[in-house]
Amino acid sequence: MDLSEKIILPEAASEDRALAIREALRHAIIDRRLAPGTKLSEAEVGALFEVSRTVARAALQMLAFEGLVKTERNRGAFVSHPSPDEARQIFASRRLIEPGIVAEAVQRITAADITRFRRQLDEEARYMSERGPAARRAEIKASGDFHLMIAAVSGNAILQKFMEELVARSSLVIALYGRSGISSCGHSEHSAILDALEARDGKRASAFMIHHIDHIEADLDLQSKHGLALKDALAMS
Image (cartoon, rainbow, N blue to C red; front, side, top):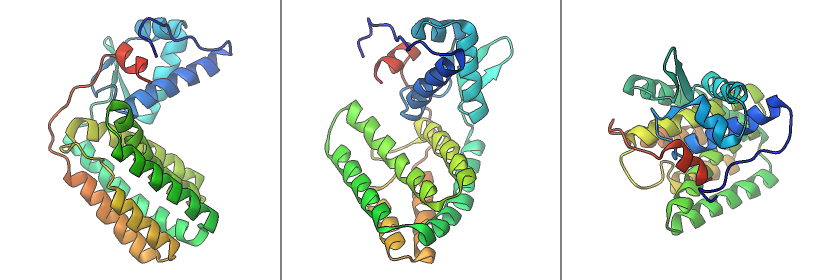
């Protein structure tokens, strides 16, 4: 998207426009184009999307409900800046929830699902072989999507919603504290989890998942990193 071009949403109800803005900002946060702590001014968001401040405020409130944005009285809205303790709680939550999701997925996964997962892993591998910020963002998204696909296969809509929030919050934590330049979700570990799912070995799949989450958390060093300004981050979508 050219920086000189304004972001114009199609004509729709205010709620639909707020949802579209929420999605654009959410992707920018999850893709780590917006760093934790970035100020999200209602006026700037409204101007960028050519909507009223009321619509912009509604979009920011949706993100605040998800935990991706924090609002402070008399200061405005900011991309959430999870503390080290909150980071540990996020991964502790994933260790509690994801093995259960995997156990459910083992009972429900089909040959068609396995095929879709294999295509997903091929996509991850392709992005890993490419260079540049766009490929890096695509790889990160593909890695997170792997976890969300397992949640979808589990058939539990409530847990799937929890996972969407946890994966998003994990991206914030990794944006702040991620130590390596490699993918936060190891491709080979995804393959091992999928192999166990295909073999319908719930115990092994759950063990691989816990090991995988431990590996992600072990790559954190508690050092903050800087992202882009709001306008520039949205321009890269």
